[in-house]
Amino acid sequence: MSDSSSSKPDELPSVEVDHQLGETDVLSGVRHSLRTPLNQIIGYCEMLQEDLSDLGQEHLLPDLQKIHTAGGQLLALINEGLAPWKLETGRVDLDSMRLEMRTPLNLIIGYAELSQEMMDDSGNLRITADLQKITAAAHNLLTMFNSQTFPAQINTTSRHNLPGGSADATLGRSTSFLRKVDAEGSGNGRILLIDDNEMNRNMLGRRLERLGHKVIEAENGLEGLSMLQTDDFDLILLDVLMPVMNGFETLKQIKTDMRLRHLPVIMISAMDEVDAAVNCIEAGAEDYLPKPFNPVLLKARISASLEKKRLRDSEQAHTAELQVEREKSDRLLHCILPKAIAERLKNGETTIADTFDEATVLFADIVDFEHLSRQFPAERMVQLLNDIFSGFDWLVDMHAMERIRTVGDSYMAVAGVPSPREDHHAAAVEVAMEMLRITNRFNSRNGVDFKVRVGVCTGPVMAGIVGRKKFLYYLWGQTVNIARELEATAPAGGIQVNAGLYDLLQEKYLFKPGEKPVTVGKDRVSTFFVTGRPVKK
Image 1 (cartoon, one colour):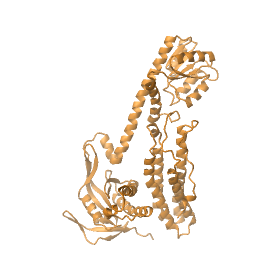
Image 2 (cartoon, one colour):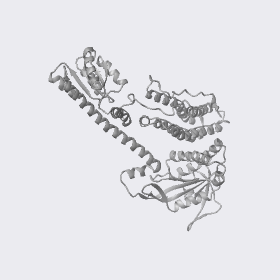
Image 3 (cartoon, rainbow, N blue to C red):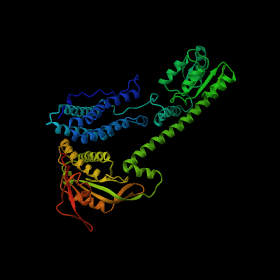
Image 4 (cartoon, rainbow, N blue to C red):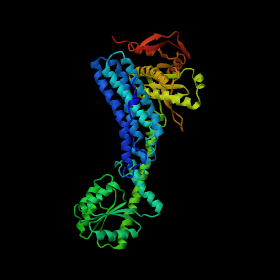
């Protein structure tokens, strides 16, 4: 076993956000720190997979594939858990991230250590060293993630550095002006005034401040563009004739920036030519005001532009909020139902009931659960059940099966439903065998002695949605009944299957006959026990 204690976790950014460091920079730092050991896990795993055939150690490939899959899931969890939309809509849910990351991290450590044990007597130091690096990186990631320096919440007040184009970035920008309007009870705005003439800036700035607006000045187009990248504004007043970068060029730069393109721009100029006004409007300007300004007209044009922006922000914020809620609903629905079934419900189907001629149903159960539950407080028992069932969920997802439900200590899954597949029987047996392996690792890690028994049956099933307010994807039929009875009569640590499954897989796995058939209703079912895989010669 490797000792990962010598691997010092990368220092994570502090939760206190420095005024010179935007929230996006903090988020990027956190992502970078978490991804570094994750990249090591995935990278060493991929190199080992490439080299195993040449080194004559192909038997390690299945476990390395599981490590690689778990690494990909961790990457997705980090990307999702620290996504900008979560910052925009509140707080990063650190507790939820820790809970979800624990299962794939423990599985990476478990499978890497199992592989190391298999290699201890081989003398192949190269493979062992790489496996130790994977284990150390996983421990490093776990330590880092549990570190007190990890930001438990990142409050956001400014979103100008978030990527443009996303619904959630739009939500953050749109609501800033709306909050200000609500607080002040008026449409006063934050205006960027870009004019190379200092007296013009002073005169117009004072006039706008008298109207209640906040004015920030820039003396040329380049300076104005720089300010737009680091601050938020509600309106731009832009002079046409300026050195360095004239107003028309500055306007084109603004309108090609996805984050700024909807920001209203009023062009100002001493020129009163119609062509100049037309060119600016065609380039995306909101309005065109000639100098000297008519105070009444100036006030009306600015008020109209700010009101249009307020209405647009309100619409964008509402749209973004709907999108965020829709994404939350979709994620919740996909947690409850298979993805294909969830999509059918969203597309308007009200009655979903299907018959499958071929599928494989799996039941797993913790032996003597009632006795075990009396040994632990309720909270501890829930933690243990969540840990072991999360591992089962991971296996089911990896083998493209569907978890149907968990009831107490009983776990039910199916292969070939709702999407038919030819290898449903093999997938279910693979999951059953891996359930026993990860239960052993679970026991070692938690200092407990849980034993699991599994029943697997292949045959026809029916499936559909039951319930109106609370949906449940339900399986029924004799195949389900037999699978449940096979699990109930299996010994601790055993996998009992029906004869039909044995007939299909007898060349791929090792079996031994059951002592006697099981009776389910009017059927007497011959049974077999899965004992392993044939030894390759």
